[in-house]
Length: 399
Image (cartoon, rainbow, N blue to C red; front, side):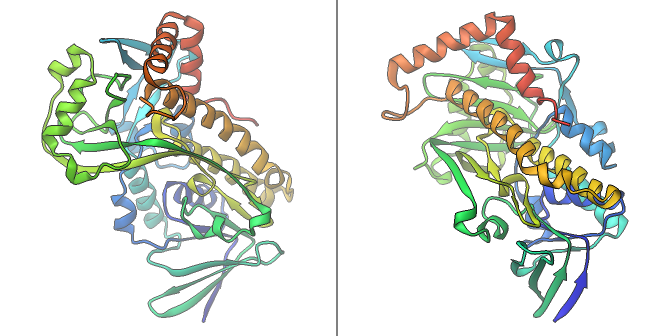
């Protein structure tokens, strides 16, 4: 067996694990990132692309924001479409000039990977049989198999950034953790296509046929979605069927002018709200999708992961620099307080914009009429629009 020593062992090389590793590296805190998949697999996952201001600021702090600022698209508003019309929600005016950045999660991950390679910080891909041990004591460790050799990492702390299906949360005794979950009765069919965006800003559409979203990754690449049944399969959806369905759910102007083209990726994602409490177990901490999932309607997934990393990195830096455990002791409480607010916002947006099947909440004509009334109120109330904007750009951090 090969044995090595570090200060923080990070499980998972997604954006949360890599961002935490970069912030700790800059602070002089030794860390190793251990990932069960290959680097190409990690980069191949198509994920979110709307970054809150606080996420942008954290990437800048980590020293990986240069390409994001060159290639990302700053958006100061979003559009809500319903009853055949579009209504713009100003994000910057009510929030003191805050905005969001459209920059794909794949690109964030690539920037973090490149930086880790450049600074020579250790990272292990394709680690098999990853296990976490003794995190309830003072000497936690991680073991894994690589190229037929068993490795052991001795550490002060373990950061579980290994996603919803990862080993870290699964290793917590059942009596020490509580899971909260809501699974939504529909999914999102999404396509990636190299065409121009449908509009300058994102369009969220509520239609009798179901929800639709026109998003983008750049000025020449789009990511569009339509609400679909969980029983649907990718092979059921040709490109032509997707574009026809998307157009049917947009306002007439957008439907008539939206650029179309062949898809380069197509997938169906289920929607769920999930939170695990607490997020600390002795010397192991959960962050990102390992601790929570939000429906993508509120654009909070990656941003919540970055918020966790912000709290956790500062707690570790404080522990090593100031010899105090106050930050790590308060990590779970502070992170969960922000997480539940984001869960509330994502649930609100999901409930407002989707068509719910019979037997799933407010359904049928009454449910749709109530959604229309709520949307009509929202776009005509400065207070309601300000509340949406405040939540969309990201709530302030608890310091």
